[in-house]
Length: 413
Image (cartoon, rainbow, N blue to C red; front, side, top):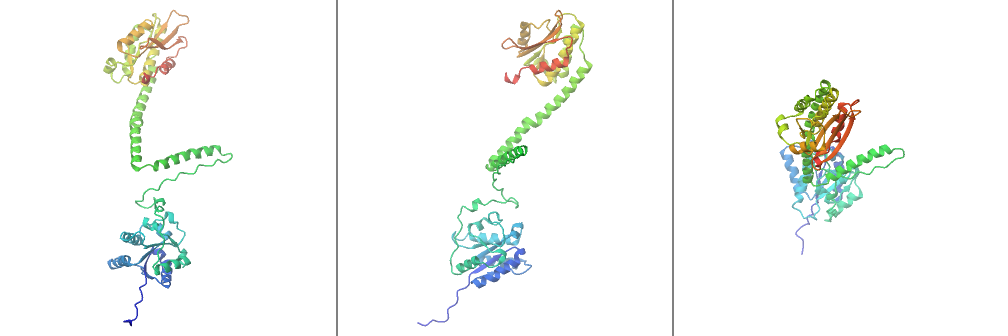
């Protein structure tokens, strides 16, 4: 049977060529070579494209072309914005309606840009890339075109490879890249100090990299917890403690300069109350609330002017220092004891529900005379600490500092 007429040649497969404007010359080289391999090329050849009609034409060509060839280069890497990125996005959107094994995207690298870190859509990484340096035709490009004309396919990449691609952080809105663990530093001869510093820096960087690998919600909770901890233990209390210590130090300095003790034994209780009033934030609370520490005014066993002067001066310094270091934990017994007998000291402590009692006395009959200071434990009736200081060279400030240092840790009780 005779044919009705000459057969119509099959239409050539069409390729849409997408590129950055800076790569226009290279795009022309590739575009001029593709027809020789049996492909029809669509791409914008105008220097200045724009307008609604131009945009609609580009969109129509991307919708109707058989293949989409994207030129990837250092120019596309450097560009945060560009019409070519819209073209890439439109091409990726079209693949949503295609079978997974249908070849449509043809990424082509025209310089030394690394595929692993290229700023391209994720979909571009699911197919094999072609290298065409400078746009000059290569045997690989010719082979690809011949297979496309023949209706063949190009093998896709394994699906797991895109997940291993590091994501850049330079682009706006890009997700942070997975943190790579830094390489452990090497120790060079004669550079021990430098090596130690580098190891410390390595530990910090490694810790941060591991922290970055945690799920985002865990990192947010950890940061929030650290902020709350810093505010509750570091910021406000630290400033308050520093301010209180600064004020207390000025009070102690002023007390040492203007008060050298009294030679009258009858003044011991009155002086103690005055000193306590200076260092108490709330006088009423200080008098009524139980305190774990109880201070009994120091005194001498007889009416000795020098002994009484040292006793009252040492007590004033001691009470002020302990009131600062053990804020809110120090109470005052209004009257001194003739001697710091353990039974009498413990009785005072039981009366006010104290845990420890501080007492001091000068035995004027001893030779040489000494100021004996003791700290008694009310709970077990024992002496926690005791020391005697010769009156001849006693320094009230040093005695006060040592007594404060020897006090028990009330937080452990």
